[in-house]
Image (cartoon, rainbow, N blue to C red; front, side, top):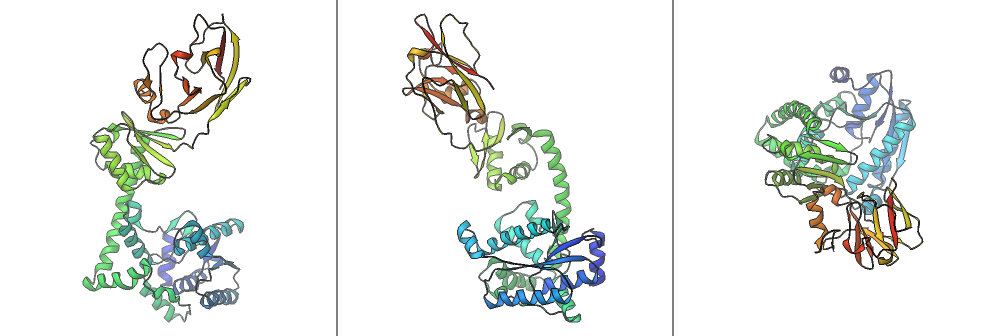
Length: 440
């Protein structure tokens, strides 16, 4: 196994004798075998161990075991005590997920502080199979079917080609001792149930299932590389980026083979799932303008001819304008507030407003427009819903969500940046003008 291990890390360029790494060591059989292989391969490393105290004296025993092993091999050891249960309760996640978050965050911090070249993890072939099956059970895309990578960012997994059986044989042949984690024998956790019950039953039904499954995943990885190449070209050609906004035209989806996979790959980093991707493709194929798909922080809006991906706008706190105010800031836009006599040349730019000062009741208010808001646009006699007014102007959904209105005594005086209300206009009887001038 040592020969195969050295050849693997050489072929994949995973580890280099000229650099030093952080080795995450639990004290279990996988960790201890990997530690032995690293030593025999002349890889320089420091050891990191986390004690969550979840198994009382067992956890302390693991810590002591790793400490003695590190001392015996003259390795620098870093120990960390953490309360995974408290983090799980605070974040409302499983203890396993909390422990993983704590572990990886500490490993990355330590790797940076010690100026090391990566974090070595002891995941092996059986862990890979379990991970892939768990991803399938949750519902996954290409990435989930590929499983864990030999190297991804700082994380290095040099044991992935080796099975649990090979690791156990190596440990026995080389007199390697390790700690048994009693929680691994409990079937309370989904991964343990899969390892102890489901997969053995599968192998019993088909003795060559393991080999065939692993072979299939290798081929799928290759297919995934081809898909990723296709996706990157599609994304480059079809998606337009403007600041925080991204725009995908309908024609890039309609009648495009694999459209759902392409859209899911695009939107997954923003928290969208495969069902939403399918819904978006359907909404584009059978145009449903105005439909919105949301995640915690983002939304994908179906406009007239494109899908608009944008961050959800934070709630806008209304702004009050008093009679003597001389300036105003609305998000990133600055305005000058000027009271002027009549006789001045009228400013017809839509980003500015000239209103009859005496028709306004102070304090004025600026807020986001709301469904049901109505006003009589300048030059018209009948009121119009702002939603219809914006549709008539072909304002995109992305821009609609940012529109604000100026309110005077409950009435809309100006749809900011678009049109003033007819009642607030300057006319022959106007004696003083209220000029709101956009600066930047």
